[in-house]
Each structure stands twice: as structure tokens, then as C-alpha cells.
Image (cartoon, rainbow, N blue to C red; front, side, top):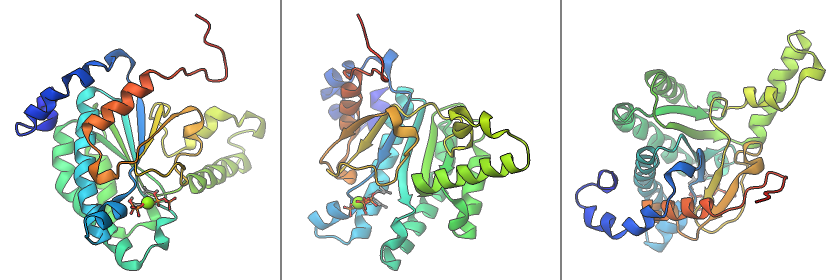
Length: 261
Ligand code: IPE
Ligand code: IPE
Ligand code: MG
């Protein structure tokens, strides 16, 4: 299975990592892992390249990590690709990112479908170009009945923006008389979130050293475990992903209660 992840060329490297993979308890995998893929710009700077080269390199990492998570049997992987705040970047970078996103969908769609991936997008879709929206709808439709990993891509996503949209939708239902105000509870909110249908987020990983949420999954991260690494996203490997999972498995999750042996 690990040979499959690394390909033949990486088989030697993979076998060197076997003890690490063996440390994972396959019965206690996080059900849902969310990743803030940060540090593309810093990686590029370190290599003396343009920031855009960092984004291109980041796509390669994403492919490998999706494959690793899928092969391991993780139920859901959510990645932060573009935030509602990223529009503040120079026009040329935003433009490049949108083109990269379109190209990624175009190139990877068939393979993802063959891998039984079920793609889903989080965020304010109407903020994307018409053609990108069409690609997004097409991808979701194509993989709708797949039963493999649920792969959520957060694009034009902000946790606060998501919660505002949820509040508007619920308020509309309340005004229409579809739901009495006193019946609005956590479960109702959950049903309106972009992540509806995914299991609760167990683990949030952020690369590149910054320790903040940057408006990612504000509601969903309520009881998630956090794992940070200095590694820039383009350098993040399946081995380091495994390291995060091993660390997760050693955490004592109490959810406000007590774990009495
Ligand atoms: C993450 O890398 C990718 C996006 C936000 C789209 P950055 O572009 O934020 O890289 P740094 O943080 O500037 O190094
Ligand atoms: C978060 O990274 C957004 C994505 C990874 C898409 P940023 O680079 O935008 O976050 P800040 O600006 O450092 O908080
Ligand atoms: Mg960044």
C-alpha cells in the first residue's frame, strides 16, 4: 500500500519509513483532517523563485497528501486553498491562483474520480468566475456517488463568512415559519454549514510556522486537535503527515469531560 503512495521510485524511501507507518493505529485514525496549506511564498523565496512557483509546487504536495490520506482510509480531508481575505493580494497572484485552481481541476478530475474520491467545495462559490463555478459544479456532480475519501476544497472560504451565510439561511427559514426560533440548536447550524455531511474535524494541521486559524473552520474546529510544523507546504511530505497522525493518536481528548481509567 505504501509503495502505491510513493510510486516505484519512492519505494526505497517508503520502506525506510516503515517503522513510522507501523506506529499508526489504523483503528484510531482521525476521521476528518483539515489542512491550512501555508508557506508557498516563503518556500519560493527560499529557492530564489517567484511566489507563483511556490503555488505550483504546492499543488504537487496536495496530490501526494490526498493520495496518502485516501490510501490510509481517512474519511475526510479538507484543505484551505483560498480564503475570503486572499483577495487582498496583488491582482497577478490572485489571477495565477485562480488559473492554477482551474488547471488542477481540469487535469486531476478523472484520476480523482477513478480513485473514488468525492470532491466537495466549501466557500462562497458565487465569488468565483462563472467558468470556475461551472467546473466546480461539474466536479461535484461527477463524483457525487463516489464512496471514497471526501475531499473538501475551501476556495473563497472564510469561517466568518460561512457563519454569516448560515445565519442568513436560518433567519430566512424562521421568518418563513419553517423553523421556530427556539428549535434552532447546534444540529440545525451544523446542517447549514458548508461541511454538512463530513464527520467532525478531528485534526487541524498548519504548515509554515504560523499558529493561527486565519478564519478557517471557526465552528468546526471547536474540539479539533492542532498540529503545527515549520515546514513550508511544498516541502510537506507523507512522512510528516504520518508524524502528525501519530502525534494525534497520543493526545488525550476530553471534550470537557474526564477520561477516568
Ligand atoms: C499558502 O501560501 C497559499 C495561499 C494562501 C493561497 P502563501 O501564499 O500564504 O505563502 P506565504 O505564507 O506567503 O509563505
Ligand atoms: C491561510 O493562509 C489561507 C490559506 C492557506 C489558503 P494565509 O497566508 O492567507 O494566512 P495569513 O494571512 O498568514 O493569516
Ligand atoms: Mg501564508
